[in-house]
Structure formats: C-alpha cells, structure tokens
Image (cartoon, rainbow, N blue to C red; front, top):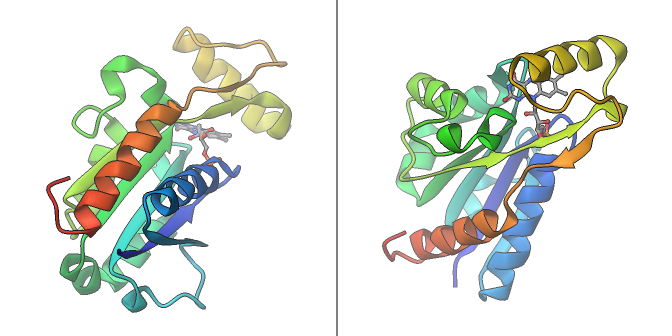
Length: 180
Ligand SMILES: Cc1cc2nc3c(=O)[nH]c(=O)nc-3n(C[C@H](O)[C@H](O)[C@H](O)COP(=O)(O)O)c2cc1C
C-alpha cells in the first residue's frame, strides 16, 4: 500500500474535485491518499511515497504556483513515482485530449524541468453563471469562435469521469512499482 499525495491548483474547484475523485478511487483500491492545495505549506511532500499534481488552465496558462512548486521540489519529484494532469476546456475536443495533443499540457511540460512518467488531461467545466462580466464575455467569444456553447445559462462539465478512474488505476500501479 502506498501513501499518495494529490496536490491541486484550481480557480473554480474542478481540479480539486478531480483530485478528490482520484483520492476516493485510490482508497477503494486500498491505497492511502491525501488531497491538498499545491500552496499548502503544512503538507510535507517528503512524507509521501508518490505525488500527483493536477492544475487547471485560465487565460491560456496554469497557475504560476505549479511551476514554482515543480522547480522548488524537482529533485523530490524525480526521486518518487509522480504524475501530472491538466484540466482545461480545449481538452473537450477529441483531437486535443491526450498528453501528446493538448497544447497546455505540452507547454507546461516544455517549461518544466521535471518530466513525469505519468500524464493526464481532463476536459473542464463551462459555467457562465460563475464568471464575472469580463470573463463571461471573453469565454462566450472563445466558445463562439470554437463552435462551443454560448448560451449564458450553459453549465456543463465535459470531464470524462471514467477516464479519471482509469488514471487512478495508473497512479496506483505507478505508486506501487508496477507499469502504469
Ligand atoms: C476566465 C477563464 C479563462 C479560461 N481560460 C481557458 C483557456 O485559456 N483555455 C482552456 O482550455 N480553458 C480555459 N478555461 C476553462 C477552465 O480551464 C475550465 O473551466 C476548468 O474546468 C477550470 O478548472 P478549475 O475549476 O479547477 O479551475 C477558462 C475558464 C475561465 C473561467
């Protein structure tokens, strides 16, 4: 049984929910798993057998705290089984929903000195009711360009939860030294 740390960076809560779903799934598999925000100074990543980082995209970028954490903890991340996943709306498109095809994960990896063995991409959520006027306008414009939903009452989670569960299986395998 491995003790797995699931760190998240979120703006609207979905990356935390995905980390919690991974936690529940890992616990069902008999693993130990803790969820914490990436900037939580009270969590000691050294105390865990494996580390998973999950982060969402806003205005084309992951939160800079993600790369800060990676740079600060690079040797630790490289010394343990570790994984990274990105949450974004572009990943709702089948042609952009893998680590090899998602532009945001590819860019983050290009900037990251740590190259995790296991990578994931999950489609995010669109909920205009939660955005301020400027973000709402910008997101509706982006969706219009991309032929996505522009109705201001749209509230949709594109996340494929079976993919999240499959990723949990890969994390467990990696953390326990089996091929992911
Ligand atoms: C203001 C704003 C900007 C966003 N920018 C992007 C973007 O540039 N590319 C993208 O694919 N998704 C973008 N998204 C979609 C988010 O990645 C998606 O809503 C995700 O579910 C957010 O996850 P979180 O709740 O963990 O922050 C944006 C969302 C908002 C509200």
